Length: 125
View 1 (cartoon, rainbow, N blue to C red):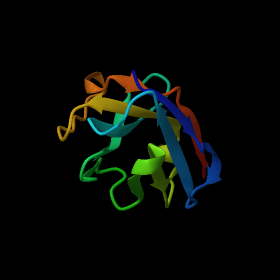
View 2: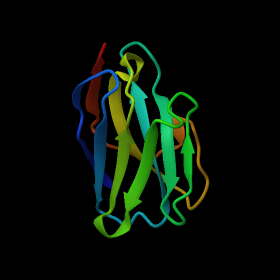
View 3: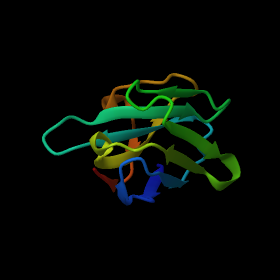
View 4: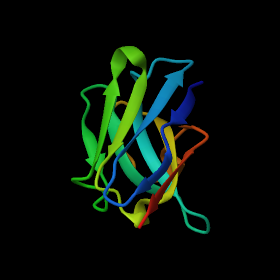
C-alpha cells in the first residue's frame, strides 16, 4: 500500500505561482509512476503531468506544458508540482496519484492505483 498526502494548494491571482507537494509513505516508489490530476465539479478527472520514479522522465498535458513542472526528491519520497503563470482555468482540486509501473505512463485516471485526498487550487482573475 502507498499512502499519499498532498499539500500546498490555495488561492492565488492569475499569473501567480504555487507549489504542490505529495508525500508518499508505506512503500518505496521505485516501482511506480507518479502523476498529478485535477478535477472540477461536474467534470472528469483530468491528467496534468506524470513522472517516472526511475529515470525521472516527465510528461505533460498540452494545457500546462511550459508552465508546470513535475519533479521528485527520491530520499524524501516526495513529488512536487511547480505551477507558474497560473490561469483561472487552472482552478481545480489537484490529486496526486501513483501507478504501479516502472516506465509505463498512462493518462487515464483508471490506470492509477493510489490517490491522495486532493488539494484545492483557486486562481482568481
